Length: 82
Image (cartoon, rainbow, N blue to C red; front, side, top):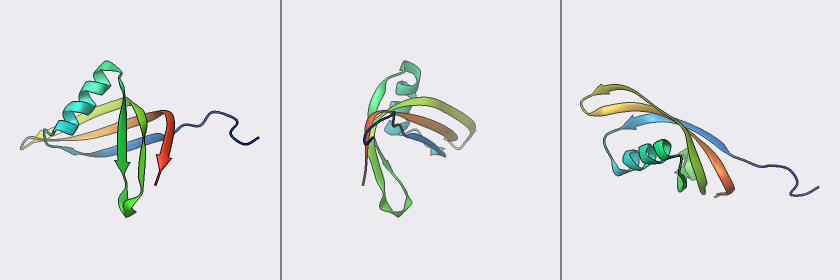
């Protein structure tokens, strides 16, 4: 049965934030529960574009204005991979 069932994409990430606009937007979306448009870029040039909900945003450490983070996103609707 082509197209049957529920399809979703879960993405987890970790990295360093340095006070950018991207960090502010993610934090705002995480705190408000907003679903927003994201374009995710991976090593090798693959991308995923779609609407996602931030389901987890955790910070750790703070050194020279940099904080490490872990992040989880869950898709809400179609995700296009290129």
